Image 1 (cartoon, helix red, strand yellow):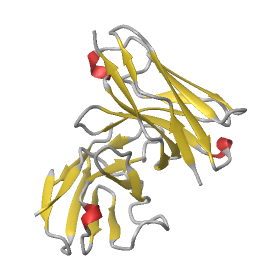
Image 2: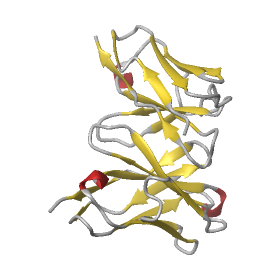
Image 3: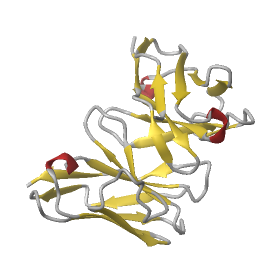
Length: 108
Length: 116
């Protein structure tokens, strides 16, 4: 099973600043990585797929990068609605999907 | 617009079974897989299994294999997921989600509580 490790577990950021989240895979997943945002009491929302592709409805301040084992999600100019938990997910060995443990982005 | 609507919350006793439904709309049902995932309170996301509405084929995680059954009905655009032999460890919010490798759209979630 491919294990995804996210860091940090919690990130304290002030509104307007940039948040940088990391996701590391135990083996190469190529570019088969997605990022999701989850707010309390809500289902996750897809932010990024293919490591760096953003669905059209997702604001441009969310950007993803990386390939192989190391991936990054950057949230620029954090808005109040961006404070949430973020998960990465690999689909390299589909149909088995695995998720990282999550990073909580909180207000500093 | 794409919507996945799940059935309501359930409370079950240990050893019982639960069946959750997921009704899809807003897209061609047979063109996208339906994944089932769960999230224990305060925890991360766990993939349970996948149903292919086009062929009826399924795949499930080793953790729940043998206890999970997924079925679909193309006339109602609905996928059901049944989990048997429930334990307290199965207490979680269960989600259906459409997509192939990644989940484009998610249902609202169904809370399943296993308690005596």
